Image (cartoon, rainbow, N blue to C red; front, side, top):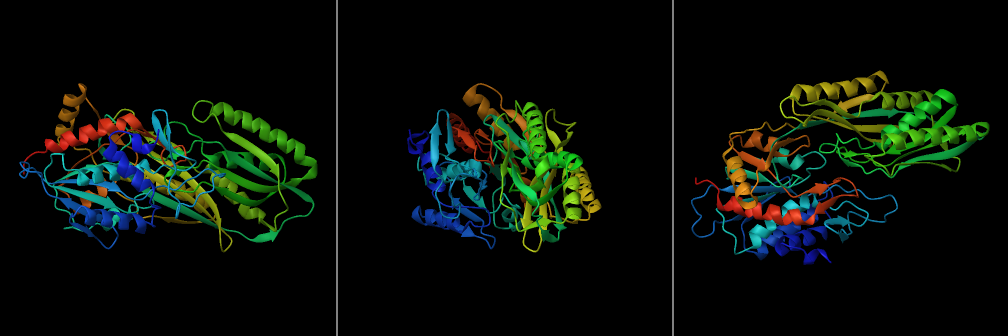
Length: 485
């Protein structure tokens, strides 16, 4: 079966088209051009702002003109992650989709259902001529995944609607009415290049096989972080045997849990077997720790060519200690909503850059603004003590739940009528653009909902096929029951 054979056909048709258009964060020119061409094809009014956000307008169907105007919103960019053995250029290549039983996934890369499926639903509504609805505005924002810069740049007056349906959630049957705010913390280490000793043997230590995942919605399920696993081993090694650190690299994106990491080290020939035993013992411990959450984890040691240089020992020591000390994972659970993560931090990436620098990227989230700032400062303190230069991103606000929302009541009643059961009303630890919309449009009445996605921000990303139909039914029914102006 192919993606174009799936139901509802109109949604999957547009999702397939979206997968054929490259759309990395900050490189959305091709998908923006696609949206503009779509609006022209269907003779719909569209406009674009300076940031690249696009809104496409569609009038009410006959008999529904008195309904309040609804904004449907999704983001156009996707997280670009691939397996290390996959040859793929996200700037040029179309996503290869695979129907795998009840799920749709990609072949060795992220799928981009986050948030391509939201885009597809909006386009399906705009293109259809048999769906009843009031006036709608379909908003497509840029660069959600690497800074929410599109939502931040949104200006007053660009939109006219009073109700907003965010289509960027990941569990069918759950309606979200709040989300965490976020902040990035970056640490930069400066090192000296020194000649790699000729009397040592060199090895590459690899951490592989982890699932990775979303650093918001999946931070609580105990997934392994390749950066943390790698540095745990380097810390143990440092306490037992002398070694030099020549290379270190792990993770990629601020909002993804690191799936892979590696280091190139030099050790004395006489310690080679002992180091292998140490790694095997440590690997056994890690496999036991992750046997349920990340059972395919691998820790590998392979011979490497002698590098041209090593990192000076003082910086290498500070880096290892700081990375080991830096928190990762859940910091606090919410007292307001049972089961909701309140505060967390993600050690996202470790990268060697030009100018003899090593850049450590981390991100913090919390539904409480003061707690978000506190954990960001805690992370900063670890790296400041190690002598690194530390900076924070601007961050973004959370979205406070409104249990008295009119559109929430419509969505609840619609779901119950359609499926004979109550939807779950939730807040999410992941970041959504809704908090930023409220800064410019404080009167907006908002909910977020979507089909079921799993392992987003990783090459294991997949979407449960049948939930798309259920979500689509729910969306169409909500639009027919929007309150009057």
